[in-house]
Image 1: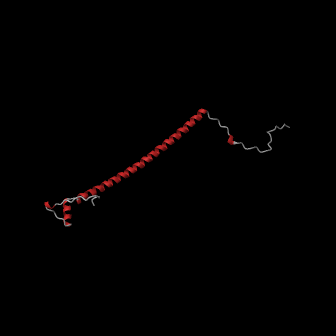
Image 2: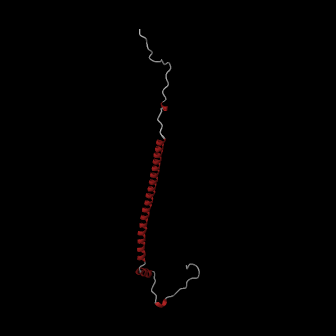
Amino acid sequence: MAAVRPVGRAVTKPQKKPDFSAVHRPGLSREQIKDRLALVGTLFAGVGILCWVLSRDAAIAAQNYQVQELKAQLEAVQRENAVLQSKVEQLSMPSRVTEVAKRMGLTYTAPGQWRVLPEPQGGDGR
């Protein structure tokens, strides 16, 4: 009979599962770390600048909206002033003033009938 060769050791206890969290990873060199930190810093700076630009753009858009509102209000006030000015001109016409004076019973005076009244003393003239 031939001799039996042992195949391996007999295991009586179950083995522990291998710890995969402690997998050996090759380390990064100092130069690679510096490059990655520079890249991350540049990205943060870029995002910061982008946020600042967007906030300034939003502020400018808001101010532009306010300017447009003010221009619309200015045009409305100018139109109202034009209407009021035409009313003043219409009400100040000499023919209209004469007509209203006649309706109120006022008459023209002769040149010698003018009378100058003295200004009241003190107060605001009421």
